[in-house]
Image 1 (cartoon, rainbow, N blue to C red):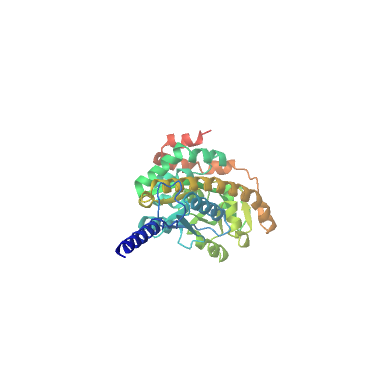
Image 2 (image 1 turned 120 degrees about the vertical axis):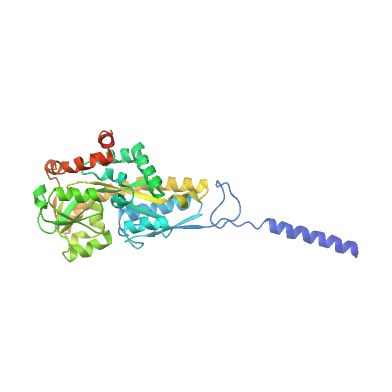
Length: 343
């Protein structure tokens, strides 16, 4: 009997050990290719932007969510907050620094208050076309600007995205020459270069956070605004604006950014997933902007806006030359020339 009990206990012990060894959770995705085995914690990332849930930002971030969750084998889960739900761009950037926001897709507009060097890309009529801008930003110059962001503010640029070329809308009159802007209250971003450019052309620049813009136009607090066509369409500004002039005065890049400390807290494989997903989604988002830009003009005309598609840009370029004179010392003429001369 003693031998039988000893044998029985040995068999039961083997079964218990085998069962314990086989209980490996795959929650958070497969461990294949990650260099880790066993349980994985799911990491939720909140990403905010100020545009609508039908905008190019939203489409790009949906692609980013898809790519990142796939590349991380489900370990990352992305929640997208459009319409300024997490605050204006400046507020969200500050949120990165205190940890209340994980990722922000922002224009360079608020950067004058964080890393002024980055706003060199906001100089008027600096870029010939989108291809020129992409080569500059995806190359050494763009990476150097990200390095300044990291050094000065502890924020890491994951990739350059795009808002597009900005154009003027208003409710008072068609804008065919700089003089037509005189006296108009034009909402601008909180960006010194943008405000100086419109002052030089005779307008009254009125900076305000983007979520405040639609009601300000609706109530006549400002006469007009300036934005890329995809923003004008997705924000339904055609409901409160009559005239659009395709001045293409500023190229407006966007940045997908995260705090450096949060990025560094992730293992190397997840850092790689973040960088790859940001770059691939950014390329996709740029394609969305291009398509929306082409289709948007027809939509705005259909909605009743009067559109000047091919204004004479040379007088506008001449009018803003004092802006270059003012900022050439701050940015360095060599940097400005290297951007202009990028082929």
